Amino acid sequence: MVPRALSDVVRPRVEGEREEEILDAVVDMLLESGYDRLTMDAVAKRARASKATLYRRWQTKQSLVVDAVIRSKSLHAQPTPDTGSLRGDLRAMFCANMVSTSDTTSVLGVVLTALQTDPEFSEDFRTRFLLPKAQAAQEIYGRAAGRGELAPGADPSLLGPALAGILLHRKFVLGEEITAELVERVLDQIILPAATGRTAVQESS
Image 1 (cartoon, rainbow, N blue to C red):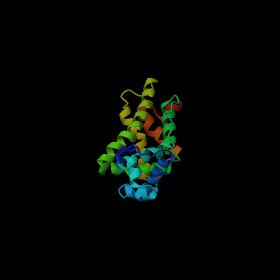
Image 2 (cartoon, one colour; image 1 turned 60 degrees about the horizontal axis):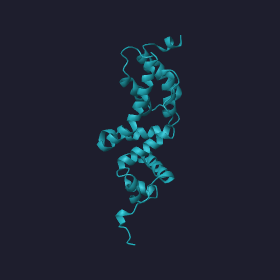
Image 3 (tube, rainbow, N blue to C red; image 1 turned 180 degrees about the vertical axis):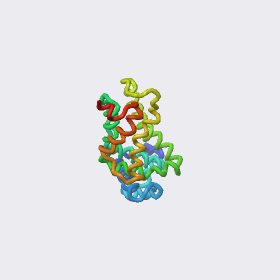
Image 4 (tube, rainbow, N blue to C red; image 1 turned 90 degrees about the vertical axis):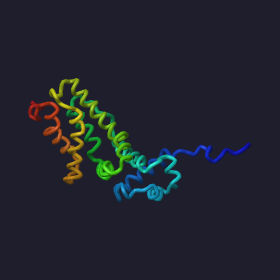
């Protein structure tokens, strides 16, 4: 039998525990040295893998980093909550995603500048990481609207990213840790009054 040409040989995919090891190495390197200094060569060396192994799974550094960020956040991800109230849903989602996940949240701070400097990364990151989160927020606000919780004129497209934006500003600009208490303060003093037209005192009365 004539051997198949080398290009016709089906090479194994990088998957399972090996894939997780590589993505964990990427997260560690992002936290240590940042996005710009991360290279496929450096990842291969850190993960004890060949560059050929990496390129069989990820064609670009950008796609590798996006997968690493998605994995780091998915370790703490929960299904979109449905607690029966806007406050409960937002509290559950953001406490699960941003509280007690300091390393994974810090990765976001590392890659934020790349959104402005690397168009390929920016497009992939917005499509595969940010868009699903925006859709989850829209689902929560859609249910709130159906329950009659939203004030007339409330704009979920503005409110949806507002909580995350405030929390990330407190962490990366002001140096505060994101806690459940901080999430609740921002919800009660900013997000819910804007969304419902009622203050926290009115909500509890």
